[in-house]
Amino acid sequence: MKPWERVARAMQRAVPDRVPLYEMHIPPKIAAAILGRDPSQVMLHNPGAFFRLAAEGRVDLDKVNRRVAEELVSLYTKLGINWIRVVGAYTHVPREVKRLGEREWLVDGRLLVWSGETLWDPQMLWDAATAPDPDDLLRYCRSAKPEVDPRAFDVLREVVKRVKGGTSSPSTLTARGGPSSPPHPS
Image 1 (cartoon, rainbow, N blue to C red):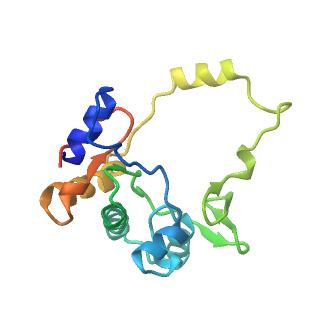
Image 2 (image 1 turned 180 degrees about the horizontal axis):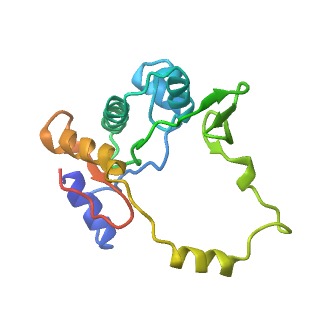
């Protein structure tokens, strides 16, 4: 059974030949070991590497996003995972990036902390006393008019091209671009 069929059957609550494999997040250290690269050279799920390039003025968004797509397809192929969780592409280069410490970055005036696995904005951490009212957040989200930069889908386009275009092992992969899009046949 092809990954597309396996994933579709599982989503339809039918019985596939085996459980389709899916991974939500592969941290850069683990990805580096699988890909045989230094962790600082892995771009997938690695804002620290992106910030370093931005601070050095060496970001080429097209190159970075192609690298992210290549790493996704390589990882999922090597691991035999059926369903690719495609990440959003980098859409802009920050104007100001400054490393403040081993884990802290100042990015366009915002303090961000990169743990090596997750990126945190300490200003967004709330305790129960200072957390926004959930109803206010819901009203805000319902009234917001988000603008989506079409470049946000560059990694998805590149993954689909690689999976469907034969530059990987398409028999092992199904690309998925987000919660509302169906799996793509391989």
